Amino acid sequence: MALLLLTAHALTAGGFGLADAALVLFFALTMPWSVIGFWNATIGFFIMRFARDPVAVVLPAVARLRGDEPIAASSAIAIFVRNEPPDRVIRNLETMMREIEVAGSAERFHLYVLSDTSQRETAETEETGFAALAEQWRSRIPVIYRRRIVNTAFKAGNFWDFCERWGSRHEFAITLDTDSFMTAGAILRLVRIMQADPKLGILQGLVVGLPSTSAFARIFQFGMRLGMRSWTIGSAWWQADCGPYWGHNAVIRLKPFIAHCHIPVLPGNGVLGGHVLSHDQIEAALMRSAGYEVRVLPEEELGWEENPPTLIEFIRRDLRWCQGNLQYGHFLLMPGMKFVSRFQLAFAMLMFLGSPAWIGLLVVGTLALAFSPTPADFIRPDAGSALLAIILVMWFAPKIATVLDVLTRPPLRRAFGGGARFLASVATETIFFILLSPIMWIGHTLFLAGVPFGRTIGWIGQVRDDHTVPWRQAMRQLLPHTVIGLGSLAIVAATHPAAIPYVLLLAGGPALSVPLAVITARPAFGIALARIGIGRLPEETAPPRALTALALPAVMAAARTV
Image 1 (tube, rainbow, N blue to C red):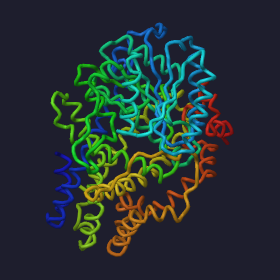
Image 2 (image 1 turned 135 degrees about the vertical axis):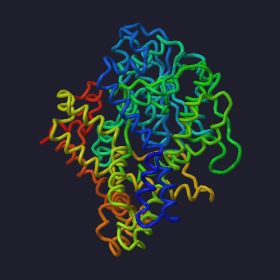
Image 3 (image 1 turned 180 degrees about the vertical axis):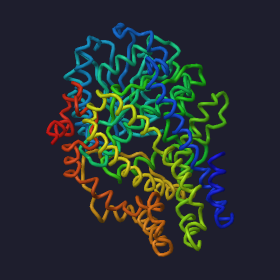
């Protein structure tokens, strides 16, 4: 409320009119994510810095473990694949399975490759590759490959088919996506925690980005690494036993999942009806409603995922999440659901529903500024500067918390490549974040505008290999973003050019979206960043044995850092 009052006060410079009221409303709609992010980061920072065992604070079961308890439960490892070459998946699985065997727990695990592939050639490659994997591991870890011909209910339906056919054979299921990788140590740790606490229904491991030579993925996941730990620890503290499930790199207790977590088909035939696209948070809410805890283990060594290598692929994935999260509205009033679970669903929706408000701030703010005699007649300089400072602190709070933590811990500084390289990476990612955020807000807004007319994204495979983005493709897909960004800057340049630095915060990214997409997709640029250490992750400084076995190009490039 104080921020809204400050906003209203800042806009009274030339009187308070209809445009000013619209700006206050738009700002109010953007607030939930910023405020919650700030408090998650603040809580997380204090736990990280002052708790003797930060993980045990948010997951008490950890304190009861020695770490060498025998694995007694039978666990399925379920990996979901769809329309992507299987080579990388097989490489990751072989590394993981060898580690499980070395740990002496192979007899307690069973691998299920759950395919929803619809492309004929990819399906044939899958069948050949996974048949060879099954033959190779026949006497050690059983492997079952199953491909559905009809992909009912998307990924949730894929897993539900597994539950109906094989779920009764196992106590737990470890879920992996095509781009997931977990070490045997991480899997065994999660299983041991589940064994020690029969009240746990879902245990979600923290997922970080796999070292990448894509410039886009590299900078993006460095930013994720900065913000995720404080955010996750802070949110895990207050969400407690109503924690998140992100659909992969987690362990599920199968019996209650099968009994309580089947997602109904939504009424209607439109984009928001039918089978649910984003299943994970709903399953977490249903598991908690059934009396079982859902918690997160905020440790960064548990597992990795590959992020999209280009801005175009990133937008495509993000819009699929946008469509799926909009369907959560059907579940907000479901009987028996915990309040925190309802909040999580609403919060996930606001992640996308707040985007049109940001674009409203840009468009309405630009026009209101243009029609003001001077910038001082549009917004009070003192209150406006204070408001901008507060917004930036709230935006960057999760990352600020981690930056402070890293800079005050010499081993962490060295893990990120040293203080100078770390700060250079932070500066690069900060500029990248400011450019990327409004690009995504425009993408969400355009998608939401098309929802009433039946626009849909669907569930398709992703391109994960580094690849170039041609200028023509970037212009075709990012033309609306460019027009909005350049249009706003042109209006301000023609009326009040002194205000351009402020407008750049929202308009700069869209204006530069095409060159950003093209340049950050160039493999040579990504390799150069890896070699000089921009976006350096601890896994590149001292690669875990499992990642060394994957022979990742980013890890090898980091070894040749100049």
